Amino acid sequence: MTSNYERAKSALEENRVALDRIAEELLVREVLDADQVGRIVRGEALEAHKPQTSPAAVADAARQTAKERPLQIPPLNKPLTQE
Image (cartoon, rainbow, N blue to C red; front, side):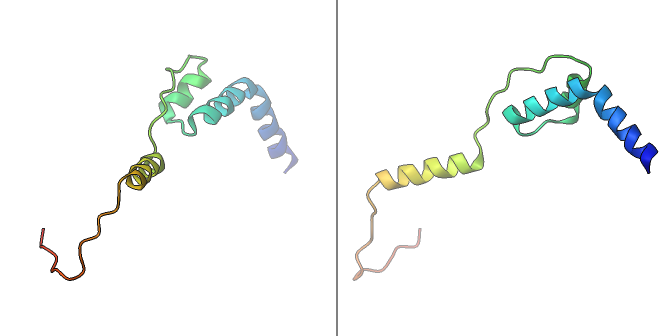
């Protein structure tokens, strides 16, 4: 068991620079694909990060615009049209 601990510790120490770069990129991007991890390990630069619009941000924007529109309620004494 001690030898496995030593092997794991040695692997982490040998790859400390790459692991730190991966951690820094994950703070910015939240997700890295295999190609990006490979480039980090090889010491290559990654392309500039372009934040993507998340589904939650789209939903928030839709709710915001819905709040700005007046709510249109059809009269209760007329049948609703089938549209």
